[in-house]
Image (cartoon, rainbow, N blue to C red):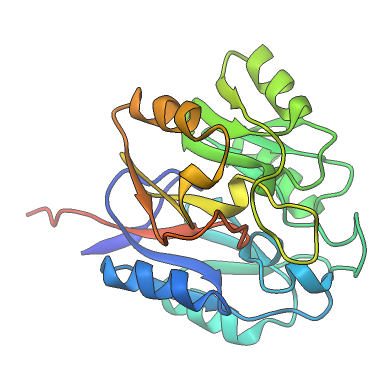
Length: 253
């Protein structure tokens, strides 16, 4: 039996369904081999070319089965509603920053880390309605830049995100910029190459050893008694995040 994940990015059980860009065939095969159903997200030509197939640019899971997605993505909408998600359109995206990052907010428990001046107002309205704290950062690519480890921990190369979240008492590991591939840009980000596949399991798109801070990252994760899955043997690749959607639950009698 499976159900949607209650809190965005934070599965409590084994993930059964996730969403990633459709062009990342090797990653899709690796996830499928783990028994995970993948919702492929096709490129959206309204976005900057290197980011057109990135899931964290096209959908934002608000939690509790509510999904915000770019308008006009009917095939994606059908796939999500078929899983029981309630979907709503954001404003249309633009080709250039900051019009491209309307859905690039990251939820961490009862906090939403974002640049509220540029993300879609439906996200900030949802946060106010649900009592979710909006944590203001200058970084527009907040979801790309923060690897969620658990409700109080994360990894980022963005000094602004690290500073703001640390002041709130969260445990944030600051790593070196770069060393993550994103064709079309000088480098990608740690949030864009990772995602939780369970409460105690985090996946990366490639080998952590391709990053100079590999041992720091591994130690940070292992201290939380979590397992690391490297989906390929290649370098870390920013694919627009691995977005967990559904998890396995025990049937109750």
